[in-house]
Image (cartoon, rainbow, N blue to C red):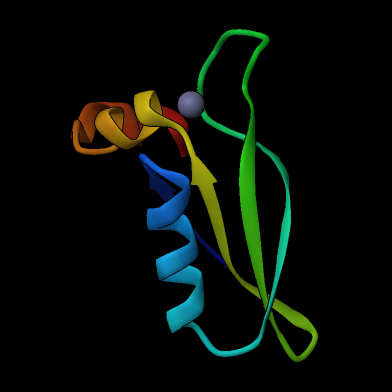
Length: 74
Ligand SMILES: [Zn+2]
């Protein structure tokens, strides 16, 4: 499963539409450290596997470009 952060709901929908399989809109936990880190998200499911976890969070989208932050997350 791969995780992708996006800025807007439209961006998230556009990306999900390009993927194979079924898409499920849900609430997902983003990488932000504060309590309000429940975000709009989409799970892309192909067969029995979740292939993509899409999460809408502006802070995480910006932070993911900072390599140091990525290392702290994973
Ligand atoms: Zn976040």
